[in-house]
Image 1 (spheres, rainbow, N blue to C red):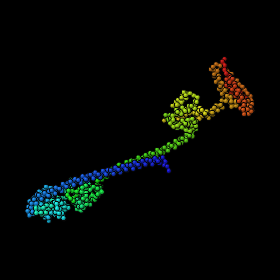
Image 2: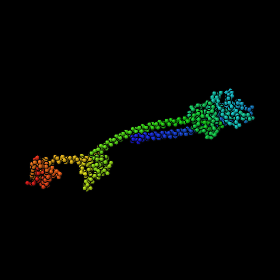
Image 3: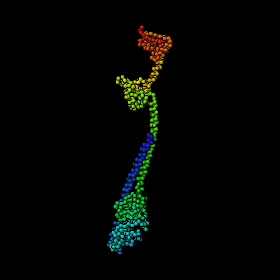
Image 4: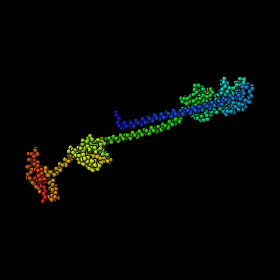
Length: 553
């Protein structure tokens, strides 16, 4: 079923609202998607920079430990001595000097292959022995090439703090293997790993390739005290480029995160930085909530505007229907009028007319139309009203009619070519237009003529009656006084006029030859001969009067 105009406007309005809301939803979704991608890119760059800094810091620190421990072999001149020739007191003094060169070190000790302390930077009696993590001594002495080894974190028996041991293999002149060990608090290495910054949303670790955690910092910036594997093992293949994936799991919390792993210069050691995705998108979520709130507010405004427009259109449609019904009623009323109707605007152009006008002026059917200047209508109809007039007379008639419209004061009677009389009434409207009513007064004119004939002429003879005759005599007397002339009046009395007229009327009815007709013929002849009025003065009996022209005395 075809929708009504009001329903169609309603559907169009809400269709536009739906399209705007859909466009708004798409725009907001695209905006949030791009801003989310930008937030993740910014976070990735931030994590990458931080991981590079942590890598550089740990490399510098471990290298300084390695160089310092390697220097003890030359400092103690171990290559030139055997174990029996080691001066313990001098070695202790030298090791205290070594420990003082790096503030991160608690102490430095020289151990033999069984783990016994040969020399130490600690004060006498302060260090009874070095409790290394299980298996660390053998692992540190195992490499064929001396390198720095890092132990698992343990609790120091002397300070009760978590520490790491840095160890490097040394050899004496007789080939006896020794191990120089330095104790480092994990808190000191955490400061190096965090580069002195407070980053509450990142997880930073120092771990082995297989995922064994050496030390780690988990938000909110707390040192993780566990030694189990932090996460799946780091692959050797990632040693060059690192691991970059937002789908990875954070090394400590296991949350979906961006993980950047950097291999250190020492084998089996990695520095990793993990940024949970939730933390990376925290700022974006705030922005997204603001954007969504603004979008919802705009959507509510669009819906409210759509409701207002729909209500306005509904009212406009209702008003148009009322106007259409009123116009239809007006058109019906105009078509039912017995008079012609024309409405002109302020510019004297046709606005509306009815069918009766076209019936009165059939020659204007092809000319009249909405917006047609009324001058053109007059220029067309003047040829039918004044068929024999000159062009100047016709132009003057048109101008006179237009001038009458400028100051409409009443009616104008006009004789149509078909013999009908039309009374034209023009009235100005409030907006400067003109309403013209064309009323056919032909019947009225005929009735008026008949009433006038009945009032001034005798019904029996058709001659002027007593009233008209006396008026004519009064006019003649006034004229005589005015002109100084004389005249005469002839009275004729016919006895039994009706008695004679009735049979004669029946006799001559078919040929209109009644005595009255004869009398009218005689009256016409007398008027032509004497040029004076005549009529029936009274009756019965019939008295006829006749005036004769006045002559000068």
